[in-house]
Length: 70
Image 1: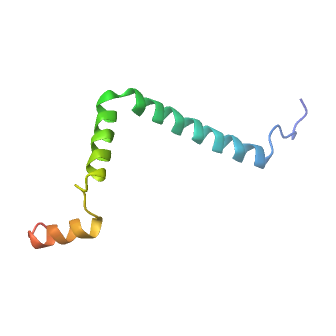
Image 2: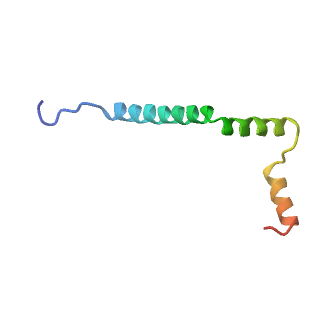
Image 3: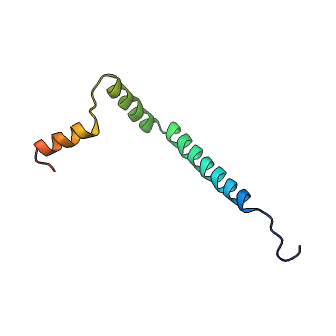
């Protein structure tokens, strides 16, 4: 191989970094999906949202202020 020859262009490197990042995200997602405890927590959170047991961030902060916690 001759000196100075480029195997990958800058665009190729950028694409490889994006693909690598995407694969890492997919692996992390699969790990969560395999974790029964984590998935039950997700299902519980979805039930809470569906039943209206949640409040938005501003309401939460206001509640903490009124309680003197912040």
